[in-house]
Length: 303
Ligand SMILES: Nc1nc2c(ncn2[C@@H]2O[C@H](COP(=O)(O)OP(=O)(O)OP(=O)(O)O)[C@@H](O)[C@H]2O)c(=O)[nH]1
Ligand SMILES: [Mg+2]
Image (tube, rainbow, N blue to C red; front, side, top):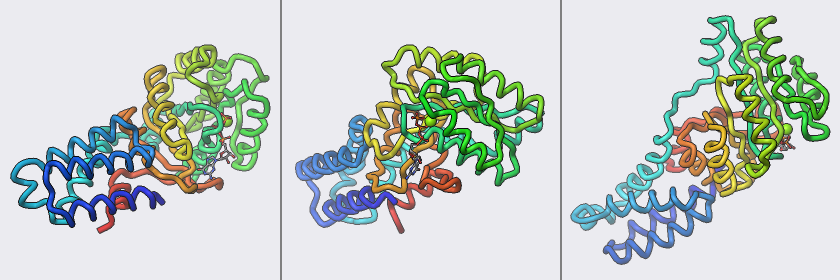
C-alpha cells in the first residue's frame, strides 16, 4: 500500500542527502519535490506547508552541519508530514463511543455522507460487520430514497449480515426514515444506527438541504465523510466542501486496495482537521482497517 508515496519520499531523501545543500539547490530540489507531492494527490496548500517546514529546518547553520546526513533529512520529512496528520485530533474511537452510548441505554448514531459511488453504502455494511465482531448491534436507516436501486442494495447487505433495515418508499422524506430507525434502535436497545444517505454534489442545493434536515432530526453522534482514494485530489475538494456545508467529524477513505498514490489521505486530514477512522481495503465485509496515523507514518518511512 502507498508504494508510490514511499518511492517519492525515498527519492527526495536520497537526492538531498547525497548533495551539499545550498539555499539554491535546496529550492531547486524542493520545487521538484513539490511537483511530485502534488502528483501524489497531496493538496497544493498542504504541499506548500510541507515545503516550508523542510526549508525552515534546513536553514542556517543546521543546513551546513547536517544536510548530508540521510537520517536527518528523513526525520525532517517525516516531521513535516506528521505535523499535518497531528493537526487532526485523533480523538475518535468508534467502539468506545458505542460502549458509552450503550451504558446510557442509547444508540450511537453514525451518519454517512459523500458524493455518489465513493463507497458509503459498502462502508456502512463493513462497519456493521466490524461492530458485530465487537458485540455491538446495528440497524440500518435507508435514507437514500433518491437513487433507484439504493434501497435494494442496502437491503441485500442487511440480509447478508442479518441486520434490520428501516426503509420507506423512494422519493419520500429521508429524515423521517432516520427518525424511525432511531426510534426502532431505542425501543429494541440496538447499539448503533447507521444512516445511509444519497450521494450528492455540493452544488445540488436540494440534496444538501435534505442532508441538513436528516442531521437536524437525527442529531448524529458522528458525521462520517466517505471518499475514495482513487478520486485523488477531488477527495480533498469534496471533504472541504462537506466540512464547510454540514461539518465532518471523521472520514473513511475507500479503495486503498487499488493502485492509489495515497496523498489524498494527507489532504483529507489537512482540509477537515479531523481524523481518518478507517481505510476501505476491498469489497468484502472485513476489508475495513482502522487508520492509525502512527502506523501510516511508519509505513511511509520504514526503519
Ligand atoms: N476495491 C474496493 N471497492 C470498494 C471499496 N469500497 C466500496 N467499493 C465498491 O465501490 C462501489 C461503490 O460503492 P457504494 O458503497 O455503492 O458507494 P456509495 O457511496 O454508496 O454510492 P451511491 O449510493 O451511488 O452514492 C461498489 O461497487 C463497491 O463494492 C473498497 O474499499 N475497495
Ligand atoms: Mg449508496
